Length: 448
Image (cartoon, rainbow, N blue to C red; front, side):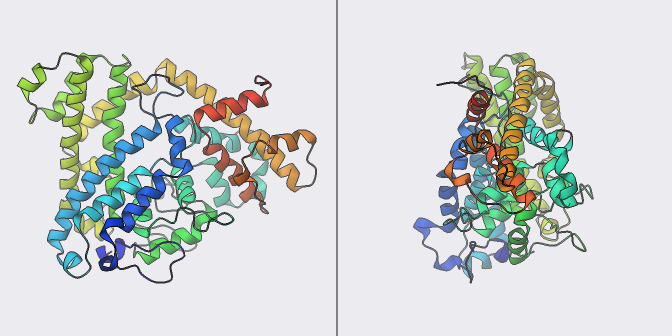
């Protein structure tokens, strides 16, 4: 792979390249990506979607929106620091093509901002709830009518693939979705493969999948246009990662490791003594002891250590990337950056403690159980009504259910797979609160 191709400013529908030297630096294309994402309805809905604590009303607990903003900030720093090194190593990128180190930061920031845009309500249990509706729930009846890959898309419903659809799928009058630049889409593609074969290798790029069957043609077009390296044969589509996808993943890994841990501490799920013990291992080389001793509240102490820890992990991730940049371009780096971090053991310790004390806390488990019931009920009601309408046998109740669909979701879908995926997409874009309200309405608990 080569950086000039990978840093493509091209957008869906373009018939020719967009040259960096011709860009208006006051309105750079990669920054336009950021703006389009942040003004989108799908991004706004993240303000009421679970990060760790579902349906939490506590003001200091992160939502998907605050998490995405923080990942974007970390991603921008990672991108700029790496961009500085890349421009120094390949000066022609600046001298001939006009790229700057900040371009890398803008691409990674935009892709990081969007990294959770396709995630359903109620956290990762939302993905599982959708998948299990089809694998062990009422949705099993559709299996024999779908291809293996279509079925796998549904039973392993994936937020990353859904996010690609949010960013790129057309609807009447809106061609190409948000029309994000190819470079930003490439950085967004953490798992540039289809749902089958499932985990064919231990390559980090094969861990999950990155697009639905409805989106495979455009996904393939973007990857090929940027010179991403194919790594599948026959009828299977898959590629080695776009190099900047490693930085998006690192930004996410850094934030959820440290900031979810901070949420657990502030909620009292993790004791401050544990927090100090674990965080100080990450910051012992650069902590200001005198500064630390002036902090009188737990929140301020933890905030200070969190900032230092994130700084340490950013610098380390940049070093791992730069040291392995040629292997990454050659498609020969099958690891996440943080898997090769000098702090991997410390991060693993924090994650293990978070799993035990936060992710498996009673409050989280109770809300995830509620989320399962809500999501599977909504899927069942809307899929049944949508299919009955298509088959010409909709009841009055089905008609009433379909009137609950927002106007932009009133689309005709000919194929069964497209209809099923359309309803999954609709449910996935609901906020936690919207989903709960809709569930209460359908179950007769909300009459006004």
